[in-house]
Length: 295
Image 1 (cartoon, rainbow, N blue to C red):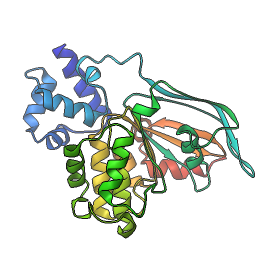
Image 2 (cartoon, rainbow, N blue to C red):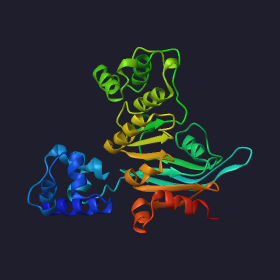
Image 3 (spheres, helix red, strand yellow):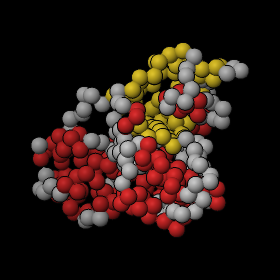
């Protein structure tokens, strides 16, 4: 098992284009420690193993043994179509597995938000099916494009309300999250008086109240200030669930995502790994420009 871990650590680190120094800096250990792990000389402690799994975006079992979970399928879309005044989605097929970080890209009006609304059950498809291999009421977290907040209650009241609805109310956890999301000073402030960036951070906090197997975030950084955007990407990097994120923040896609979907002409026009794109010496921004001009 020791040799399996050492091999898997080297393999995953190389695939994600992370140096030993990168790993060491993220874990606050020496580069020599990472080298010893990869050589099989020593092993990281449990806390470092858990952190490594998050950084490398795999399960702990996969990191230690190299085995994958045979029951890792989380979501399946089959032949999904939707029209309003004109067709928006046409025969969309998609599968999502455990520990995937998926960037959903597409031009304005491509149907990204419609697809997210169908997945989350806000609207029904005209044709096709959406199947979860998880309990959406317990294991699906959502951050919509528009803030779903009650303007005339306080920040703390909103958080408590959602916590009680989701049966995850914990006073200590709420206080920790308020501090983590830099909203302690606004906890007793009416939501209508928050800035746009503060409202987005509150929406992000609410989407983080419970652990999940799958999180879906639609343009999460829109309206955020630079500090909040940096915080969001660090938060995403610390999570171990699968994520689908609608974003145009190309500077971050190369770093944080394992898979990229391009929605175009109502269909999944491209579905590729970031590794494949990088192997062709392209950034995600370059790949997007080329593929969004085709056809």
